[in-house]
Image 1 (cartoon, rainbow, N blue to C red):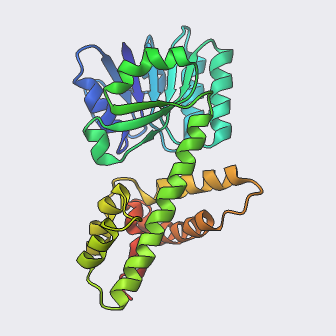
Image 2 (cartoon, rainbow, N blue to C red):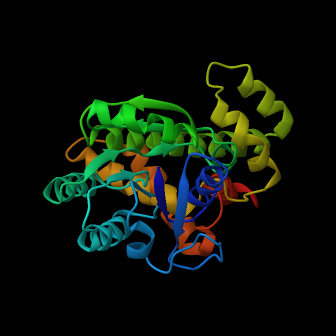
Length: 276
């Protein structure tokens, strides 16, 4: 396939690197801030010209709408749009409608997995849309992932991605509070980490985040700014439901983002307690 990857952030750049090494695919990339790759186009329209698949790894809903509209308006042929960006549900529905109107095929296919998983080609895609199209795109997505999970009609994958990020954000906030309380009472971080690992509350997320939270290493794997954006999207989904946990986590992330920590890993939630 001829594939255009639009968006070369933490995840998109690593997905593109894996696709670039695959002999069956011809790659073109684009990023708003040029990265200097040999296969880099100067605009999304140029990158998407005469491609079979356009894969979006962009920041947020407004950016996805802007770039997708430019690509769809400039195209004279039929192609597949894979949206791997995490966006609000209305943007996903807009993408589905615009693609149908312009005779493009569309998959709602956000991912889970952070920097290291992307580098290893071990993302997990939640894929929603035409089941036959999912199967046709499965081998392409396999280059950058270890699993593709069909989710039903377009929009359902977006919902699943947002609610699972609710769990991740709330878990890291809870771990931050628990680590702070334990430390305040003289419990060593290593002892607390071992205790969590042996407890029913232990998880791969806790195992990944706790050591760096304890040491103050907040190098970004998934940024606070992105998790804050996703928390706001999931609050929109909640509508009239009472969701105090994600609202509290979102408020704390907003405070840290305003303090200039948005580009740090979202485990920087623990930094609010480090001095005390």
